Image 1 (cartoon, helix red, strand yellow):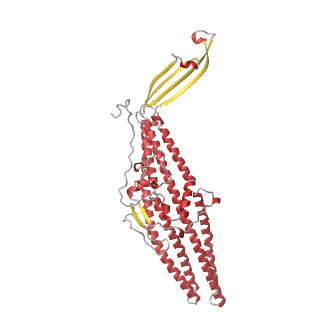
Image 2 (image 1 turned 180 degrees about the vertical axis):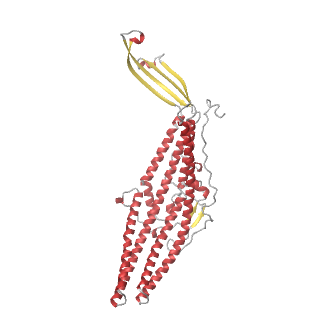
Image 3 (image 1 turned 90 degrees about the vertical axis):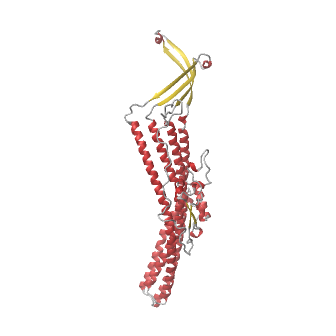
Length: 496
């Protein structure tokens, strides 16, 4: 009989009480234990990365790239990106809505005043053919209070607060996405610049080779077919430059837009692979902490909380609603007479409403709320699975990226040595031009592939930081809102 004393207490709250979902019972991100470090290669960007399991993630993780230009651009994006500003405004709206939803938990007090001039027929008093003129002034104070005996208003306030919490983590997700996008876009720009530089070097070398073939042709040491083949090779290599330059221009436009600018207001920063350091100490959070660190998981948990509270609202709508009301005021024929003795008026009242028949509307609304809760629970589980997959993918990528750089570095050294030898042998007439052409193609492909592999390590490192939550709980650039709880119990991960 939990509601037996509902008239003398705060009443009961129907519907499920939200419980934070339990963490998955897993001890790692990959089927096998995580290797302590990746492979290494004797080339720029080829150092081994070490995985520091359980170490906390810095709030400004992009500074680990040791690039002042990147740090400046990220800060510009955080200050001017409209998507981030929209998320900040949405959070303010959600918090104000949640505060407004607490209003029904308190009594409402209204003051009113009116003044009227009236004429009535004397027939009302048995005096036909006559009329009466009079004035009426009224001043009144009214109070009403919904007892909320089954917690409808409390559950509605709980749902609104959960919605605000969801929006809070949507903002953190927007922050993380923006910073990650800036870093990855900057790395991609650096990669394109390196590929363009390598392609131009290749064109220059191939042009030198073309001059040599032409001289040999003039001396009778090479055929016209050899000259045409080398000319085609130079033209084909040059033909790859416009596509790379187009991608570079588009990447610049992307970075400019992320910084909140129009394309004509291009950013000042330019990025090169040589100016970016590969982070070597990679913090890897424990799986038990990932649920607290990922803003999308926290947002999904808030949505689940909101759905749980809305089941309580729908349940309470089917139960009796009790309201108390009172008013006190004064009524007189003139405004200054409102304060004379004998003009006071007052009333006390109570109202009880029990829904009886609404065509099944309330029942089906509750069933819909339960279904929405089940949907939110499934979406939460899906979000958790996706988060763990993201981390596993990023860890695997860093390991294979390191292997790729090592293999591509070896391939580049071998291809470069083979090309130099082929050039010497061709100049001496020891090999055919076809052999030299194959060596050129192999060397060109190896050089471009090495640049791409080096850039992939930088990009996938950013992907791992994003997958682990990006250290938003360590941010110092955004102060907590007034009255906001930033403890671990409020969704902020504890330091590992």
